[in-house]
Image 1: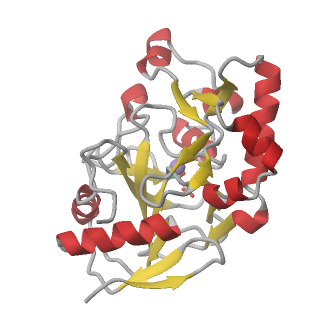
Image 2 (image 1 turned 180 degrees about the horizontal axis):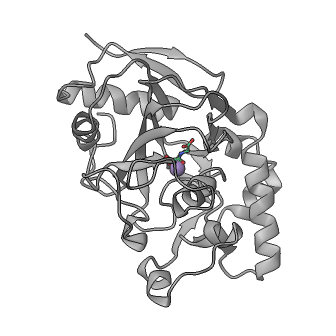
Image 3 (image 1 turned 135 degrees about the vertical axis):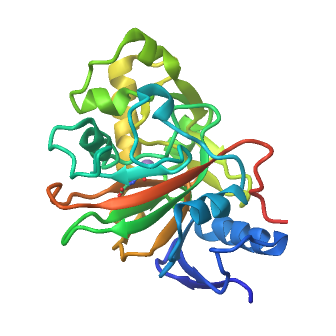
Length: 292
Ligand code: OGA
Ligand code: MN
């Protein structure tokens, strides 16, 4: 069988089927999925009964796995394999996390528009999120197309940002959310990463506007001016017409390219369980990302 794609939005995102992602992928299948990711940037696989190990194996076909903020927090985790990121409001003991828990703080940070791990170098390439338990309302995940966002910029802005770079910092979103109790050691564990605002996506050759809430400073600009500018660009990039809203069903696996999209979770009742698991690929040269 080969990959089938059904577009879900006028600019990006397709529902993918025709490949069994619960079993080891052939080189041809990896190439087909990469080609689809280069074009659509977000792929939705419905009805996937993946175990944690199968999700890890699927992810590993595209490159080494990224642990993101686990390096800083070193918290007790519910899932045994550290390569599986527990995107849930469930604590290490298996209970719904307290309203003011660190777990929920991370979830609220995920409700700000971001690209996974853009605060570190290497940053993330693909992420894959698999839904296990869903709340009765809300909890959608939205995606924004940064290529379409770039294309729609006025020429004046395109020229202005051509050479600009922004600093992305891991704890910026936490601090925005009022959580500042980090030790100096934690603050130093992930030094800021610097990324050009305009990037060319290696798999598609398309230019894109690389912004997101981790970006806190335009290099060389005064702080207030640079924060307002980044805020403006982010607002541009996340206009409704560039956004796809994913309404989760149990068993969905959504994979996205963090180099060409932003995403954010949406509100739900945090007294209800919401459990998803994420795997993320590091954007390193040895990753198997480009289509042949
Ligand atoms: C993530 C993320 C948003 C959500 O898993 O990287 O940002 O809706 N998730 O849970
Ligand atoms: Mn995320």
